[in-house]
Length: 109
Image (cartoon, rainbow, N blue to C red):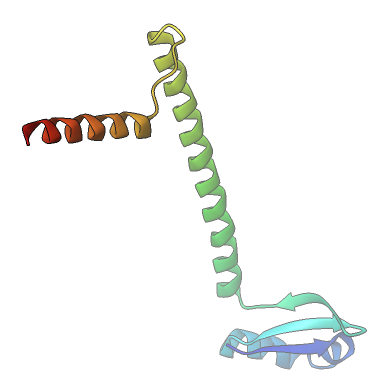
């Protein structure tokens, strides 16, 4: 899909041609004023894809925030059950278990 730059004046002169090319060939146009991009002309399918990307991003963000809230609630529940004593680090627990296993193996030799 080709993207072309076109000045505002050229766009005004060729609006029918530009719109036909966008519709039938999927071309995209960047409209420039004084060499600066100010707008884009894209087909409806491209616009739908862009909108879906925004929706997907918003949904992912909402799921992430929900997961964080659930993790916070679980942490609070665990702290309450442990009467405020923090939950041990999983990493520390695994290291301790490995060390214990290694000690057991060394004692067998």
